[in-house]
Amino acid sequence: MKEKMELNEIIDEIFESLKFAKIKRSKFVTFMEQQDDPYVVLIACILSLRTNDTTTYPATMKMLQLAKTPQEMMNVDEEELAETIYPVGFYKNKAKQIIALSKKLVEEYDGKVPDSIDELLKFDGVGRKTANLVLAKGFNKPAICVDVHVHRIFNRLGLVKTETPEETEMKLREIIPEKYWIRLNTEFVTLGQNVCKPTKPMCPFCPINYYCKSNPNKDEE
Image (cartoon, rainbow, N blue to C red; front, side, top):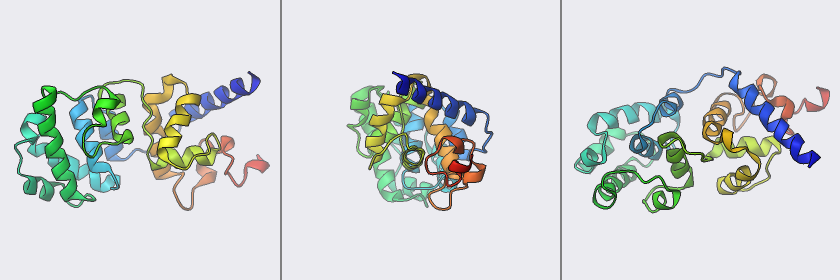
């Protein structure tokens, strides 16, 4: 019980520190944080896969000029959509996926994005990361969205020891209080993009370095 209480305290302090860290968010992260339309969250997240935010954001803005609803998107020419979202990674394949899922939403779901992870995973191009982000941002439902940043940082912190983002999600569901689930992705993606980078992490400037087992200066603190 003592260890569990200590872990909960550490997690509370980590999220409190991030809340007041004032790390600048990317335009795409800010955009997604402001969204409450499940469909926009869904198609924007698909664009973001394997693509950095500086490329994803303008591509998303251009895409939404073409269509903002499944009904509109299903009638967009696939080649036109591909040209519009270029140069996001796999832009041709993503254009095909977005139009196909839009058509499926209209024909099988009355044009409404389902609020179930099991239903969302039935769509081509939608994995657990995307499905959880739709639930969290689009429906304001507690869901843990784990991308490469979240996976990397929680392993560096030593709070999990996992090989894949999917494993990390399942472990985090066990140790992270539900009250933090929705904001978790935004906080840790921002930290990962600016401070806890894949290579050359800026540990001295990290607001949660005190709690990190990978911090090279931890023993001196």
